Length: 218
Image (tube, rainbow, N blue to C red; front, side, top):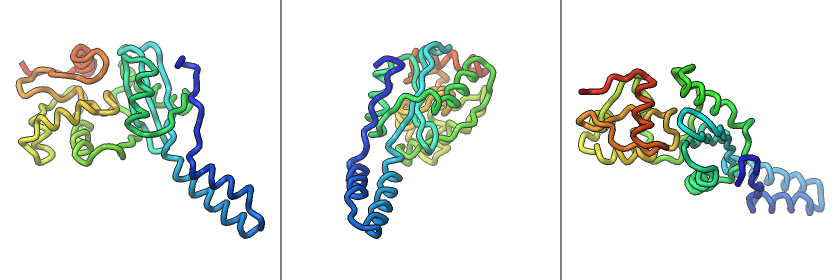
């Protein structure tokens, strides 16, 4: 898929059936009932549409973001458009549509952050497809101030599960919106960077921490 290609939008079966009922309705009363059903079907289908945008050259490589009516759904970098679309489609079970207009604000804010022109984000996040455990873990990561770091053990204690350091690491590794949810600010118990699921791995994690002026444990 090239950057200018837009996946064909496929209407939900319930929407199509509701449309058929509107056209086939024999009376005004039945038509109104069919129209009401169509509105309900359209509202149900609304959350199944995700728009994504693409910035080909950023400080971390090709950058992709995806948004829906609730907020930012996904952010990834250092991979191909096909890989990004496949990942988000698999995770959200949604129809992805390329729309740089819909994704413009998220792309703008992330690029400004990477260029050192912004220190915080003003973006809504859609965390509805995360488990309760992951939401709690990423909620702690969101609260880590710029320039500061925590360990996996610190996060585990913060959510009331001090023995869950490994599970915390796994939850952070599945962070769908890195950088915006700063999982890079969480280190190993010995102060080492450990893994980073974003493009470039530990090298990118180190660069992000340097960008933010973090002082790492010696």
